[in-house]
Length: 192
Image (cartoon, helix red, strand yellow):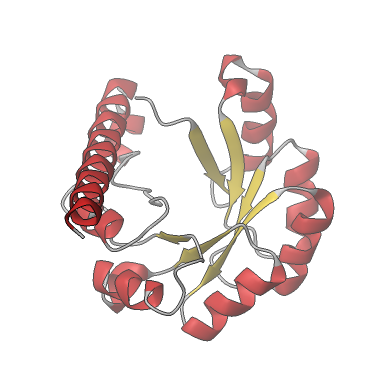
């Protein structure tokens, strides 16, 4: 569907082997990472399996430090402004805002971006086809999408085309929103 990044969460049965196999497969040109990484031990196992990035649902500074020391891209989870700042200062490449939908959604991302414009925020939880554009407009660097992208029904029925179509829809929304925002910015700066 055009999305060059896949996150395999550690809640998936056999997740480490899935990461190993994906890294050896024809999908190896994709960026393949591990999600729901809770501690340094898990981070080490994921990195050894070939994970190119690590995502945690909450802030664990030791995991961030490990990722930085290994040169593995890190997306530490955070919710409060203090956690966001702490994750960023510790070296997290992106900060996952989780569970974003439960604390205001796109409005919360916009509120965080006010004092923290330099921090690339990635909202997860509450991101769907109806809210994707709002999150991008609010300043999200990327979107974390789970069940709305990889629907259980598609997996159970063996219909990957559903996932591919969902990916295309999300990608189209993100591209169109970013293009619209860039055009509006250009128009605003030429009027000044």
